Image (cartoon, rainbow, N blue to C red):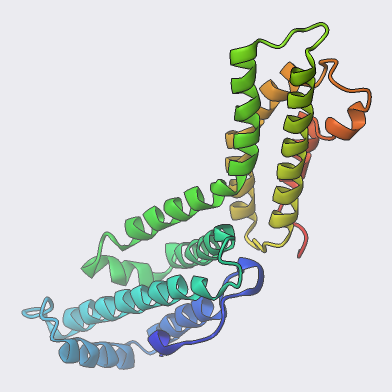
Length: 261
């Protein structure tokens, strides 16, 4: 029973076995269409859903089957959403986003070329668009893992807008500000790198999408930051502070989610 499944969420946010099991169950039912439509019709009658009234026997059976399959998908999604609460770290909302992205992506891809989708479409034509919207929401939630890096960069750019750092000799407070800024940026990149090494994204297209979204969000901003401040004379120990250049950061992002593969 999908609604009663109490298993823990997958390690690293990977696709949960329940997702593949539910889809395999639906695909298996299709191999026995007569039995499947009987099961679906019993479910529809129990739920007192009457949208199929007036249809012929075969059409009614397929319509009821679509209602049943759509409900299974809704139960699956509700169960997956609840499972995100099982991740130990309450502060790491990114792992929850990764988990939902993995599972919704798997669901949409598996349904895309399946006769199951055609059957569901007859009674619920907006089902695909709903889960595509859920995917976009989770994608936005995922990109929030870049927020500490974005904030660290923006703070230094705003400081420069106010204080207009010299290209020559810098004031002591400006040198200290740059040291603090690069230290914060380095820490943010270190944490982001470590965080994304712990996540599992098995689907190649999804991995590429997440990397692309990250680079679109951060790379132009980081290039501006690096080109503006990295060569200023604020320290004798430059290697300590300018550990990451744009090429290095882009390479790091391109290697996200490879740790478990």
